[in-house]
Amino acid sequence: MLSRFRWFSLVLVGVLGVVGAIVFTACSTTKLTSPGTTLVLTVLADPKTFNYVLNTSAPDPTSYVLEGLITENGETGEIEPALAESWDVSPNSQRIVFTLREGLKWSDGEPLTVDDVVFTYNDLYFNEAIPTSIRDVLRIGENEALPTVRKLNDRQVEFISPEPFAPLLRNTGLAILPAHILRESVETSDEQGNPLFLTKWGTDTDPTQIIGNSAYTIASYDTSQRIVYERNPNYWRKGSQGEPQPYIERIVLEILESTDAALIQFRSGGVDAIGVTPDYFSLMKREEQRGGFTIYNGGTAPGTTFISFNLNQGKRNGVPLIDPVKSRWFNTIEFRQAIAYGIDRQRMLNNTFQGLGELQNSPISIQSPYYLSPKEGLPVYEYDPEQAKALLQSVGFQYNTIGQLFDSDDNRVRFTLITNAGNKIREAMASQIKQDLSQIGIQVDLFPLTFNTLINKLNVSLDWECYLLGFTGGVEPNSGSNVWKTEGRSHRFNQAAQPGDTPIEGRIVSDWEKEIERLYIQGAQTLDEVQRKAIYAESQRLTQAYLPFIYLVNPFTLSAVRDTIEPIKFSALSGALWNIYELQIKDEGWGSRVFFYLLSTCKFSVDRWRLGQSWRDRPGLEGRLLIDGGWGNPYVVALD
Image: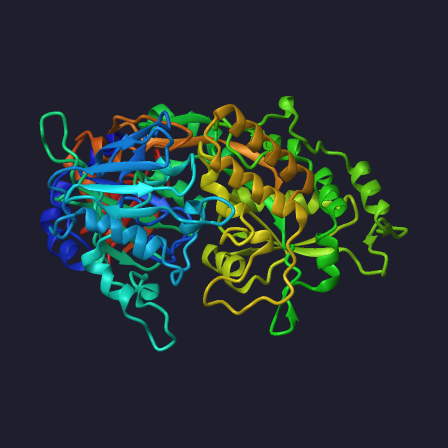
């Protein structure tokens, strides 16, 4: 598979006769059955759930397992058929009739029918007893009505919107789930009256029981180690000659603790594709040809990176979610504007991102036709610490003789900034923010957390002060409406209590929050594209005026992919692997791919020695395997 390891095939042939029995008895995961059919990728955290409806974090572990009626072309963003082979939209865009493909099956061989579509929408997405952020993007108008979904016949399903709703068609890309597997869990409740579905398909579920309709199924999941996906034999897509897709038999998703670990794995040949962070770009670019990979640059990434303050003024069980002193700071507009002026984003772009990106000012992706640029009137906050200080002093903050900032009650201005541990870029961004804000007298305490712990704070306990993270993006603004709807599950800067959560008393929703919500509702109701652009332009102006999110840097979308994988149709919208169903791995040798599959699934002890020492001269090497540990750095590996 990997050209720089082609020589290893010869070594492996001689060694396998000695250690073959040990190899295949030492491994507890799926055996490799044929050469060139395993794609190895990485992720920085364990999944929180395999339940698509309840998932709130990216990447979604079921993205290879489930798909919807339609999909988006990863290069153009255009809508294309998926489970539905065609659709008919009424002249007023309020009625869509989908026709499903013939012979669709679930991964367990059961028929996939219109009943599954109706069940997914009516019993899952529209079910108020199920707390899902998906429902937020389907709500229509000020009354937050939901579409009606009903079966017309065995192959046709009808969606009707009670009023014009521009994103209706694009929203039907939401995953369809199996009624024959999940219906009972929806209709049965636990002792507290909650549907058993809320605990369905958690990470403790036998992965083979998770039934899907897309290119792959989940074969196994080992906590903090890996998720293994295997080709779905019942997938509907066929190649140009009628052959079943996908072509790649298996995907191994290695769960690593940091981007550093991912880079080491990639350089050693054990991983086939990784996102390239700016701090690694120069190193990897030098090794691109010799390493047998290509770095793809899709330009500025869709989505956002930001810091956000907790503006929730409510209480739980009589206890404020946020220290009232700090809450007063955070809810002062001038305070947030001062923070924006106090962060040197250009230095962040130059240093942390090595110039590989652009300054970010909008919640709407640059690729969207609704994006408003600074040249078109979008407010921006250029680095200006003196302006930051003046704003703070204008609302009662004051400095002592050594430049420390205090509020009018002599409270030292200090807050905690959390981000996800293991992401070096975000940790570097947080470190610079700490430095920059110290120049305007504010003390920032950094507190990196594991990703799942971070998400739990943001979504459940709500006991956070400021966080650094990002949202994914796309071409349709309404896909992010759950961020801007005041009751939306992703309205994290002033989160409402969700079903089943401890109630929040005294939560206050500001007028500007309500106005942004109104604009998003109006934008979704409007079919005229010129008017839609004007509506979303005003929403972007408001977000920059009131700064619920302080946007930072929009990096370039960079990925390194082995040259053995093709055809790559890279784009910023969807990355390198959006067309996973048609990707193939060119066979460059059986030995290296077998070895690296074993390396990723077995336990090894590793002994590194002096560069250039011959493996034949290494005492006690019998029964061991030699690999290249990264473009000329040799390792001896012995199976435990």
